[in-house]
Image (cartoon, rainbow, N blue to C red; front, top):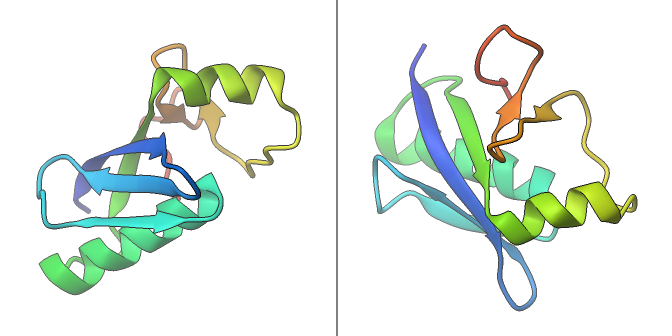
Length: 95
C-alpha cells in the first residue's frame, strides 16, 4: 500500500488538495473531506495506484479553523498538532 503526502489549503471558494510527491496530482472540493476523496481518485487514475493512503497536511489557517469552527465535520481521523491527520497511534489515516 503506497502512502502519499497531500497539502490542503483554502482557496477563494474551495479547498485545494495537492499531492507533494507528484505535482500533476491536484484537485479541489467544497469540503476538506471532498478534497481528500477527490485527490485519492486523482492519484488512483493518474498514478494507477489502487486504494492509496494519504497523509493530509492542513495549512495553519485550516488547523485554527478546525479548533474554532465546529461546523467543519470530519469523520474518524484526528488532527495532529503538526496539522496532519492521524488515526490514534497507528500511523497515517486512510481516508
